[in-house]
Image (cartoon, rainbow, N blue to C red; front, side, top):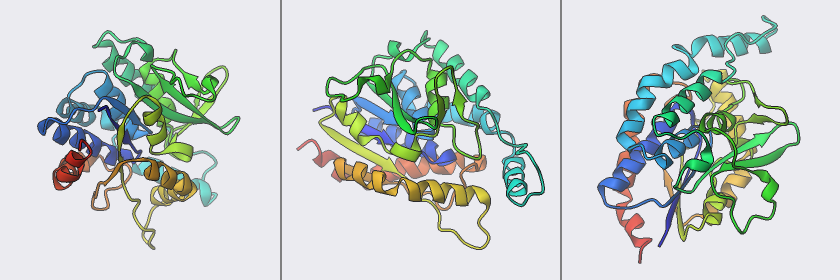
Length: 284
């Protein structure tokens, strides 16, 4: 049996996916196919390249602040100021180039220049805001694909991750000569179907719940909740396709809260341990 895993986006909470993968490895459960969106694409790509779950956690601790900035407050205050007409520009918005460079650098350590060089089946969804269509960065175009033109196999890992992770209000769209990509979560936050197309017999979906909106919620909480609402129907369909859903509890960790990486990693690990018997039943 081939086991696939589909990792959702979730900002900093995405490091919980590394904890999930670590717990699976510790219990001799092999993942054969992997896919991820946004921060899930970061974990999925690193794992597919052969990096161990714990080393992925170390990489996140090393580079998280470089990717989103040492402090998320300038981004948040900049957006709030924009919508309150206090500023004409969103000064905290990042173009994502640093994220792309970091992942290309990490890939080069494995002598990987292009996503097609990765051996483990990998899928990374994104959305082109120009034509409102989903595209999938992958190393293998599935035989069952209805529209093969939606699959991109000639891109660097950095470009694929940046495209899928261009979260609105944090990163500008990832542009090339043809496309302007934004966060894949708008159309496919949990790529269960794409993982199945790669030949997975069973698929585990790993997701997070967005925090409820309250009076003290900041603009990033509102943006995250909005994305969740827009993609809720598609997410429901993806979850129905999966064979098991792991809903990782992260205790209200903020989208960009880099100080909670260790906690999130442990949350992911513990989630697998708590559901270990259900996971093992997938093999029956």
